[in-house]
Image (cartoon, rainbow, N blue to C red; front, side, top):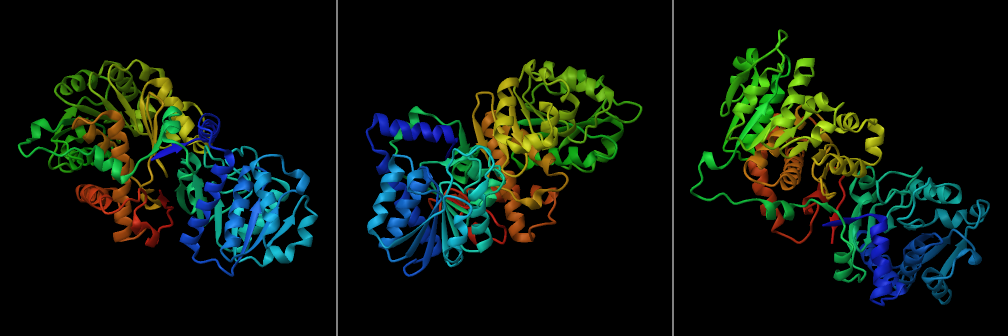
Length: 543
């Protein structure tokens, strides 16, 4: 599923109007009519019900005027709360649709200033439903004045809200709240979903999201290619390889995991076991010499290889030559789980990354060891996949966690392009970014996965997919989706909190099969039908 920025969507609209001669009023009409269909789908028959349309001065308000007209014609009692007077509406499609309301039984309240709210408070208080058509996708500054007053009133009302295109106050490109935002129960968006719909906190504010086809020709979207997609079950299953019946362990990839330090053996063990659960034919776990007896008991199917260690039991720089020798014949090298950040371990990472000829998945302490020298990544001779959480991403990008979380897609894309790496920025709505600027946003997963060891399991899954011959970009998005889907399965079966990273390991193979079975049962892309009845509050993206 294609995800667009506000600028990309505006370019598609303009091209449709200017090149194909489809009038803007036609697009607006299609948008408003589609929004009403979405409203009926989620809120039921609105005949005889009181519906308030909160409308701004721009095209978002114009969409709202179309909604008002269709609702009135279908028997609803409609009131339009316009954030301007007649003179405040600029010439264009919105104004033309506003004029069409004059012949209908629609009450219009003009809120041109803060003082005008007092006169219409009874009308504001007696709506059964709200349509948010205040602010569109172009918003970047904080909401203030009477727009903030209206948004706050709608949110306090407790009434069901349909957002037109995007909840007002939400940044379409980052999903961040511009001071305040409508909390919608459903959103009808037009043409394509926007980034702000699928990243947090935007995802939590949109409710159920439906993409409405407004008539943009396919040639337009092809000519203005969007570099962002939503990972879906269908895409996971289309990418998933079917293993030939004559397969054996030797032709399904061999992963070398390097990690572990005193007190952190579990991280390395889980990464190794996850690579096996992801389908790798063979896994070898390299760890400091003194930890080998411990790790041998934690990885029953994987082989182990003791490596040179420091006096404190940490991985020593002298292990580089041994790891390079071990990596011969391997298809992927996973570095970092539980590794520690001792000076000698940092030297190990700084020497190994430029020399490895095997694709590398670098996580956790492996990332921390190179965070101060990201230029090291540009010297890598093999593909590099990084799997940072927001704090590790901040160290890599020399910024702070708040800045990362404020614009996850931009931060991830910029770093991947600048360093030539593949990046899996973990967290709610994991972002997979790649050297060519393409981005995939992952919708699976839930808050119950915020516990120790989950990242180590993801590292192993990515490495297991790479070892089986998946391209790094494909391995990243498939691993992120499967990892999250396993968490969703456990949340449904065990409860929303308290399941463990090791539980993810146990269900991975069955979840992979289940995802592909369920994805063939209907046309909806994400989440699937079960989500609407789930105790977990997650949005629905449908087309």
